[in-house]
Length: 114
Length: 113
Image (cartoon, rainbow over all chains, first blue to last red):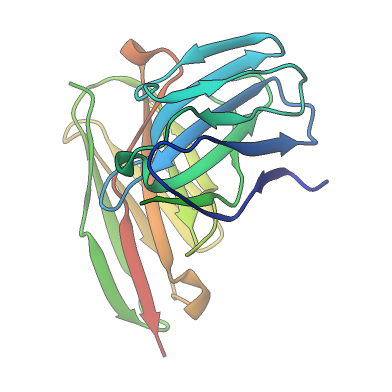
């Protein structure tokens, strides 16, 4: 099992550009989520999905879109990048999304917006 | 407000020594409390998970404890190794937040030879 994979590992964008961060898992997990991690702060939830075709907003959803067409993939789209979106982005998955589930994190994507 | 605060922000210890990291939370009771280890440039990896009714949980040289009276959890690392150098993150699932996780800012530990 590859676990949770993310691409790209690094990305530099100019303000106003759009891009998609890819996330895939091969563990047949129903629950997937996206977090951002900023220096000195805890991870914050952007969007999550409890299964294919179902997505919902987390704590900091503005400026981001998600979709979940398959169980395996959960891409995160930045519509018009802003410097405030400079961060490290982590995708995570868990079997069902129950609070007792272990969450498995990907290796992260470091995004810089100039 | 649901908050998780960790101390110290950073810590340097010598290889072989023990250390204790602290986590304070504001709302009680909660569904569960987790400790994660995050190596530089990697995603967090789960170390322990405790429910509100548990006092302690171990995973090898890592032992997490919970004091509900003081709203505090500790992560104790025994006989530290160079590979323990990482950030350690406390995460609480509060009842009033559904299944959403509230992350602490982490403690960055450096183990020196």
